[in-house]
Image 1 (spheres, rainbow, N blue to C red):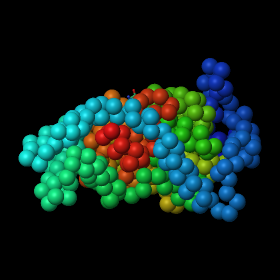
Image 2: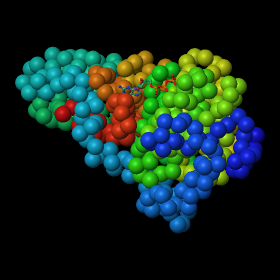
Image 3: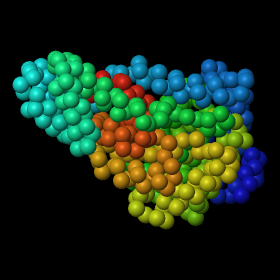
Length: 378
Ligand SMILES: Nc1nc2c(ncn2[C@@H]2O[C@H](COP(=O)(O)OP(=O)(O)OP(=O)(O)O)[C@@H](O)[C@H]2O)c(=O)[nH]1
Ligand SMILES: [Mg+2]
């Protein structure tokens, strides 16, 4: 159904909702009021001029991706605390290397491999790392515990950076950029989308959310809470029968017509083995591309970090069906499984773009491989 910006002809199965004032408990403000407020904000008066580009829009998204990444560098403290359990597990590496001597190389490397396995680096990668350390030790290239530690950090960093693409969001050149968030049930899609909206809003980006989880009645309520918390606008389905692809398509149309910078699309959780549900995701992707060719710019797969290496088959399947452009690894706070970040990147050659390290507004961190390596091996 074609979208009209006129309030009176607004789609009968779609609602365009402005978040209520923070002090208000009223859930839905009227649409007319929203139309006014959107028109006002698209004039640019209410957001930071930092990302306004006079010549094309290329600079806007490139700078946005870079800026968010730069912020991660200054956020080392958070990254550090997020990976505290992984760090505890890997602390044994320091003890091993402190007393390292050549005669004990085999024992030390065996224990080091075990520490990597416990942290979910996976058998193949743990073996690969340790084998290369052994070669360098035996050839005399590495002569001290600290050199071995540096080489260990470098090999993990190489695994994270050599094959996968850029960790910055790649948002293309046209507004609105569209980001779809997909994954199995309960992985943290909606929460991550909310946290991502917060990051973007902090940079002055005009965000529209699309409640594409049409399976659970409570799903759009949950996203509305995030819309309210982050001051984002949201498009939700009205009525039970609305297809997810319609919600996303209407939201992207709305985003295009009303000058939004980014449309964030939530989707229902689904098992990667369920053919019909995976096909629905393909329909969502096509519906978005029909409105803006080349969209969605990013399809981010949310993986629950506490599932460790079990996330690999999920990632493979989602990637095969819809083509994943980046990963969000959630629930790494307190989990001792930070090594699975390395396994997933190495295996799939898909970059991790964000990591979730808590349930709060600020607990989604842009993934910075160097900071990550420092955080787990410090
Ligand atoms: N500790 C922690 N909890 C998280 C993180 N991300 C999400 N959660 C929690 O995980 C639970 C599920 O999160 P949701 O965002 O609802 O997950 P979802 O993938 O949207 O779930 P469905 O829509 O049901 O498929 C919630 O209780 C979140 O608060 C994280 O990084 N750390
Ligand atoms: Mg959800």
